[in-house]
Image 1 (cartoon, rainbow, N blue to C red):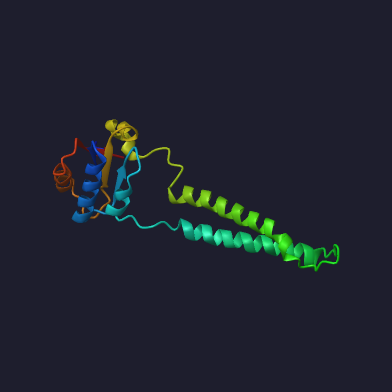
Image 2: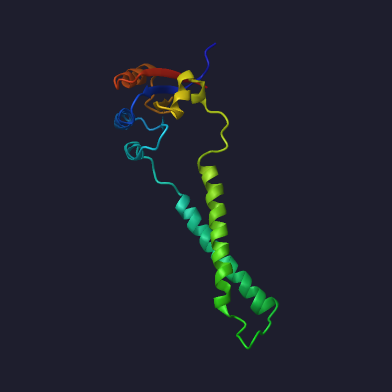
Length: 177
């Protein structure tokens, strides 16, 4: 019995070929695809039309929450819970709150960045179907791969294979789940 199909993966020798193939795939209407490269390729993000991440919004919200929380905690401690007059200063002496407010801002923003990045990247992911392709081990060395997933509405095994082969890859392989 045949295993379910995850998609088709095409192997390329140069980053320019991968960028061209990803652009052509997007032009053909494929949207559920992913590219694998041993090095970062700036143009790839643009030709695949990957939407911007929501990470900056989460980090900004957490930073603001951290600064408000840090300042509020110090205000509550020094003005409401334990008012203590030191050297005739007012109870709400805000300049002394600045270091703690800054530290809570950085702490909450940093932790939010870590947790949100892990969540948005879908980690931990100890297994992915592309690992079933024997030549995929070259993706971390010197080869570039474009995988079109079977979940894509335009995916048809024969037409997609013909399309990928028209891009002159080294090899087109079926990826089984």
